[in-house]
Image: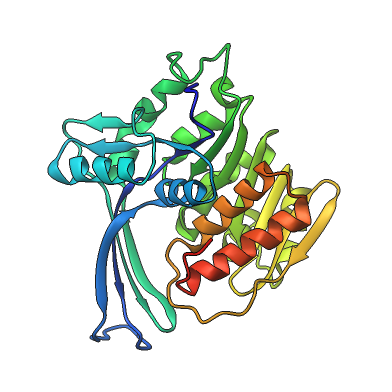
Length: 297
């Protein structure tokens, strides 16, 4: 393990292309707004947020050796990420994510993480070859893992000795990939961060309440979970019970990356010694500030 790494962020690191408009949008809408391109992806968003909260993140991901990849590597390094362990592919292009957001929330999004999926377990080599750990001397720190990896690789990670001693925090990349996290429902060291819809997909059920969803996930074998529900009550649960919290009311100006900010804030709060209730409260406040456009974390 490198001496200055406090959290490994494993998963998608790509270019986010986000179009935002202050107008209410529907299918076929053509409205004025702003289009931005920023470093993004679930793993990157978590890394950026944990860095703002005072942790030192390192990235395990795949980035192409194309011009966009070179630019992305520089941008990640400038933002304080440790990029020394990133797998750079000669023949795979750098991944991208595109989303459109209106005043009524996320309208549509497409995640092109095909290069990350194609790279497979090559991104995990530092955890095997002794750079960060081995199967007999595994990495023992914090790991944030996102569901953009393939189902097969996530299944492999769930039983891999290289992850057997880590404080493993796992989040789906989207509801469409939530079921990829099924192997972590019974993992002895994993904590799941999901929204209400994702919890329903994992439990093959429909929930109207985050607390009920969290309790059900624990009953299905999860060690520890957090279930969020937008601006409504969120819940955190383990074998000792369920706690809940409600985010402050804010004017929502953006949504992409809100869940990643919540997860990063919750992890950071716990590293500072916050108890369960305080960590949940701090994470909800940070996510609310983020969606309101306030970056003062």
